[in-house]
Every structure is written in structure tokens, then in C-alpha cells.
Image 1 (cartoon, rainbow, N blue to C red):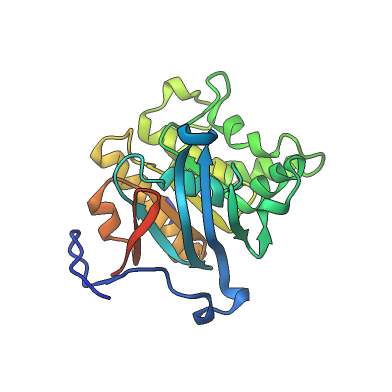
Image 2: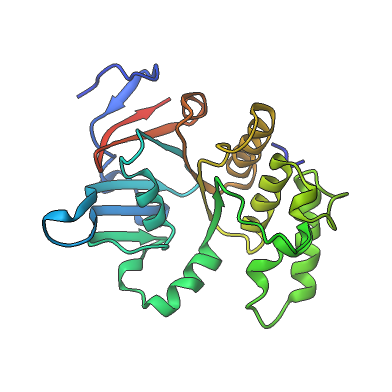
Length: 256
């Protein structure tokens, strides 16, 4: 396995900030993610849904952050924007200093593949592929280095405790094992940013705890920036910083 104004916050935090820390507190080179006055709407006219309403947020390189809030508050929308899966209606989303809103759609896949690792609630493994082949999926469009990627994929699967399951297909793996395959897949191209959307939501408590420890270890031991969207207050309580969303805006920010 990988070595793994202030108000009282309802999750028991000692400190709550009404807004994210200002950019002046952080050197630009230390910023992994920056959202500036970000709005995202779906549809047009009176029927348009305002998913995000002017969100400002800065996340430092190597930070471990959870995003919480009720269903429909904008958590996943914000994660999709940070991961370049979508673009804001207005405002700026920067990833490692790159304004992804100004990147041509045909080039966004390169940004996603090289800079961001995704772990979803649903594992999104290809049923007919083995665990090893699933981990290798991000490298398939690449022309060179397949032997090296295969070696890295095997190493990653061993590191998450699946060294003896390389040839097993998803249907032969438990939910926890499938999510560990998904974590290994997200790490294949060594992204600096890991985004996890309810990564333990479909797992039993023991399997969920194991997957969470993997994500914590990636931050603690590999120095990766990790952002976890979760409904689980126990998971959020373990994060150094928790951003609580409400109705498309940041309601509070808690520091442990």
C-alpha cells in the first residue's frame, strides 16, 4: 500500500472564515487553483439554473481541501470547472496559472490528461479490460513510452495493494478494489492535482476508509494537491481546510 467574521461551524471547527483567503496572501507560483468571480449557469432566460454565483477561491500547491454542502449547492460543478471538464459562464478559473477558459476545447483534453487526476464516486472502469489495462487507459492516446507506462501501471497497482489482481476484470474485484484501480489510473501520468468526487460514496465503511487513506497519503507523502468533494462530515473533519458551499456560493471556510 502507499505509505499512507468568525462563527461556530456546525462540523465542530474552531475557525470559520466568511470568504477564501485573498490572493495577496499567496505567491502566484504557490497557487494550484484560483477561481475569481466564477459564475456558471445552465440554460437561458428565466429558466436558467445558476449553479455558481460569483465564487472566489484560492488553493495552494500541496494543499488538502474538502468541499462540502447539501445536494445541488454547486460542489460538483465547481470540481468540474477546476478539472477543465467544463468552462465558466463568466469569471476566471486558473489551473497552475493557466486560464482554462481561454484554452481551445480541442486542447482541454491535454490539460485534463496531464495536469489532473480524477476519482469519481462511480468507478468508470471498462468492464472488458483488466485492472492493468484500465490503469493504462490515459496513456492509450500517447504515441510513445507505452512500455514505461505499463511498468508504472504495474507499480501503481502494487502500491495500492493490487499486485496480485493485475489480470482481474472489474467484475472480479470488490468495490474497494475497483476504486483503488481508479486511483491508480488517475496517477498514471503523475498529475499534480487530484480531484475526488464522493470517492467513498459507493463503498462500505472499511473500503471507504482504505480509499481515503490512499488520497491522504498522496497529499502527505507525494505532495499532491488533493480536493475532495464529500457529504461525509467525518471525512471533512479530517481535512486541514473545508469549503462549505450553499446555493452556488461559498458559505464558509473552516481551518482545522
